[in-house]
Length: 126
Image (cartoon, rainbow, N blue to C red; front, side, top):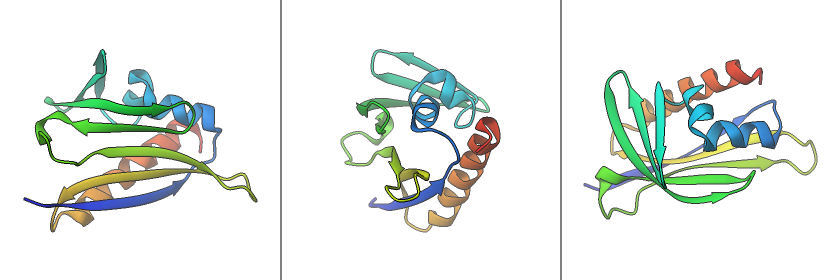
């Protein structure tokens, strides 16, 4: 089944270094994204309320972005990516999220990201 691409943007009052740590390390991701995160090589295992999902780290650009591919999606060209953008004029830091979901589940996926990013903002004071 074809998945729908979501692109979301969140303004976060923090530095790119702090935000990058939150999106790229197991301890940072546990603060807001998943209950527990383990890493072995390039494979991150995420745990939510007993559910486990594995994602391969596809690319990482220091203080800029991380891109993961859910392993159960097989060869589909789906991924989730978190990028940091700094506005040249205002120096505002934004988290840009690209994700894919089943058609018709866009609003649920957006609400899930909104809730997770709210947790992130609370944890880093942004």
